[in-house]
Amino acid sequence: MDVAAALDRLAPRLSPTATEAVNARRLSGGASLETWAFDLDDGTPLILRRRPDGAAMRETALSLASEAALIRAAEQAGAPTPRVVRVCAPRDGLGEAYVMRRLEGETLGRRIVRDQAFAGVRPGLARRCGEVLARIHAVPTAGLPDLATSDARGELARYEEIYHQLGAQRPILEAAFRWLESIAPPPPERPVLVHGDFRNGNLMIHPTGGLVGVLDWELAHLGDPAEDLGWICVNSWRFGEWRKPVGGFGDYADLLAGHGGEISLDRVRFWQALGSLKWGVMCLMMYSSFATGQDRSIERAMIGRRTSEAEIDLVALMEAPMGMLS
Amino acid sequence: MISHPTAAELAEAVAAFDAEAVLPGDARQAFLARVADNARATLAREAEQGATLEAEAVDRLSALLGAVGDFAMLNARLCEALREGALDPLDPALLAHLRATAIGQIAIDQPSYGGLAALRDGGNGG
Image 1 (cartoon, helix red, strand yellow):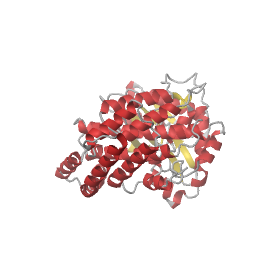
Image 2 (image 1 turned 45 degrees about the vertical axis):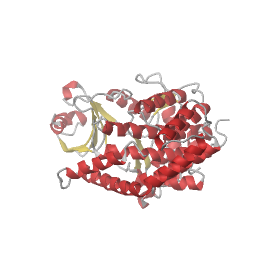
Image 3 (image 1 turned 120 degrees about the horizontal axis):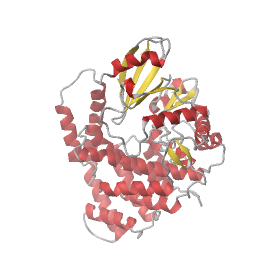
Image 4 (image 1 turned 60 degrees about the horizontal axis):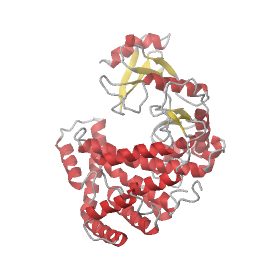
């Protein structure tokens, strides 16, 4: 498939003043989805998301048309998102794909939490994340594409099943499953739209504009709003700035206040701990593709050794469980 | 013994990467070269600290479970006790063992990880 040539042919349908696409280049990224950056000759900066030819969809992942519909719904609700320009049709010759505006900013957590360029926006970022999540969580669910619904107990059971299938003997993960099961909150009365992967890496941060785009809606589902608030507090995405629980740049109080103040810290900390547990299981899962020979890269081997990062975070959380949900 | 991956698997993956042809300017390969460097450093730390850590873990597990055996057997028995609910996940003696286990393994896998300082600080950043 010649993606650049297909984008060239598509250019006039992406902007009335464009005749061709230029500078098409594939960005590094996932194996399940390709991301391409390109420009139109009228200067419009764009991104193409497409499923590679023959790639199987992950069982839990959304179709790209659904992803695009969610981005549009979130934009309507006032959340910052890249504007979707076109959901591709078969005649576009790009397979399952959509095109969106390319935003200016940084997604690399290491830079966002440390670089001087972001020092001005960091103090307000945790509150802003809370505000943006509140808008996402307020999206009317009636008009959305079909989404899976999950809750705390269901997620625990799902990840414990995966963990058992992997055949690892990790007492910290075993203890964390039992502990979290004993304090799991009931499902929310009204499940909301949950982004599902709201963390450094998927947030476009501009040096003066702050959070300008929430990216990667592939794991969106219906569930507990505290799930998104807890996920961005997982230590693995603080990039060394562990004293700042919200993404390595802010405090719990600002995140909670930005969201509206109706969600308790204990509920967020539960989902943060479940987030660390899920991350630990994901590291084992990614390692297993090395073990089975599916992907023998050094990267897949080494990611297994990041399980211990989730484990040390879980021990810290188990040592200081506070009045969790009691 | 540390598994998922074992030191032998890690060494094998490093050797496979080193055997690949060098592609100058290839971003993916440059990234993998940094991962391979990290893997070599991890292997060096494990060669130095792994045996001591395992011996200490066996001592702790024997005391905790009141049993004798090698690391794999005792560790599997601990996992089983947790799974079956025979041990409270917040039991202080258990937590002391898990804490020592976590600190020992992160010292090999990723000694600069912020979670180590956070655990020693007792707060995990609040």
